[in-house]
Image (tube, rainbow, N blue to C red; front, top):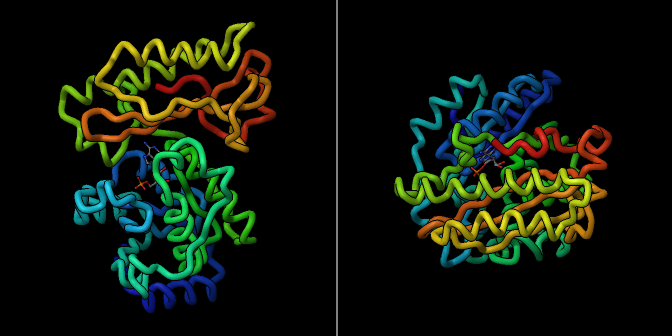
Length: 305
Ligand code: AMP
């Protein structure tokens, strides 16, 4: 495994790969890697000739009140994991390499469509998805991967990236990977390190609520309202978990789901103390629950544990 830090070195690697006709897979991350990132790398290594894992805490996707300056980092541990997983390169650029004019005047930005960014996390993190789309476009332009891997834990992000690739005609195949959870159901996240032991216990209500909502979606008379109420009731039992949003949206368009006849996703963001957590689960109403026809999402549906 080789650590690549500058653009010139990255371009040399890419030229060599193209000369040899090798398929490159990319796993973009912000580091502080865990088994969720590990699952993305495993999938990429299984499907591509070579894999690059990028580690970059992207300033333009953080709001002024967010945790950019204290975002957890452990590069030696990340590099060991990347090596163990069999990826060939870790790309760890300086901010100045990816933003030649600086991040306060970042130059050309890639702005995803409003309908994908106005709701869910976009409603609370203004400019976040422009930051994400911009940095991912830069990474794709530099490394020219044939495939790229993203986690369904960041469900809205996967929708934004798929639209980016479609709209800018990028020759990248985007693969989504199911959310990896702790045995007790908590979705793995680099930010879980912020949680105190008590907060971590309180946060488990999130998975319980998603599971209960899944069950509610199976009822023959299930409605979006009933599914949401089930989750709301559970979440209300843990007042330390302060909801930002709980929304049931169409899996593809992210529009509010008005019935359960199409694949939908129940997504939420909540603060536990100072830590903001997100999670989601794919829901299928009774008519769709046994159908693979809409299986764009490979996650085991309605079993968030
Ligand atoms: P991050 O480092 O948080 O920006 O995440 C990098 C990638 O890992 C994104 O595509 C995330 O969706 C994905 N990821 C983060 N947490 C998980 C998880 N628990 N399971 C699967 N993928 C994840």
